[in-house]
Amino acid sequence: MTDTTQMRVMITGVTGMVGEGVLHECLQSAHVEKVLVLNRRACGVVHPKLTEVIVADFFTLDGLVEKLRGYNACFFCAGLSSVGLDEAEYRRLTYDLTLHFAQTLLQLNPGLTFCYISGAGTDSVQKSTLMWARVKGQTENALLAMPFDNSYMFRPGYLQPTKGLKNTKRFYYIIAWMYPILRRIFPGSMSTLRQLGQAMINVVRFGSKKRVLEVRDIVALSKHVEIIGASAKSS
Image (cartoon, rainbow, N blue to C red; front, side, top):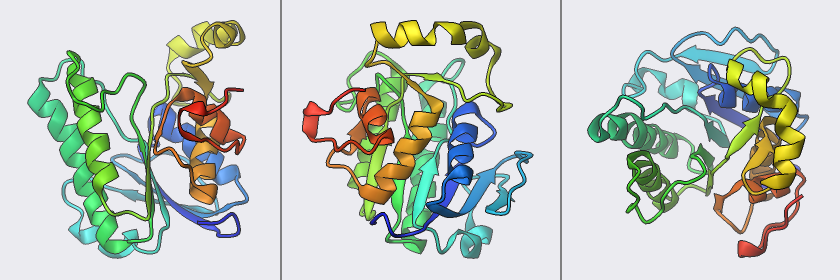
């Protein structure tokens, strides 16, 4: 997609902090024409660009086919913690659910760019002792193998929240004042939620030679700095 193409974006997970922040950036962007959000419960956001569809079960999408047509980007921000889940259940709600959704979109919108929120520490070779890292890595690999027009895996670390949004957990407000200091000490681990949203918009507009995007790549893309292999520059 070029920068002259208006984006019609589908977003999942906007009742969480990451999805809400990405939605905020899309609604503010002149490059995004239309946004469809798919949630299990209402997000409470009203905007002329926005259409919301409540989905009781993301494994059952047959009745939504016509509503899912006509989009050229998907920002898959839905996800859950692995705490309290065994590997089989976490895999079902992470790998199986995401792939089912992606396969449905691929059939309906073959020219779509699929962007998946994964996480720093995800294991592409699937040998980590951390269960969630293996499952996320398997999910990334399966998405990258699908014949989308483009697909990108985003691996954010700590995200400084966007002020004024309602789904930010109290923890982030407590340590927000430390962000400028921590960003200087750990530039490869920290970015803002706004940078993540801007990077997702820009990767659809301009593309990226890298398809698995770490924190430094996300910061660079948020400013539309070209990324070439492992030599991406940090801001």
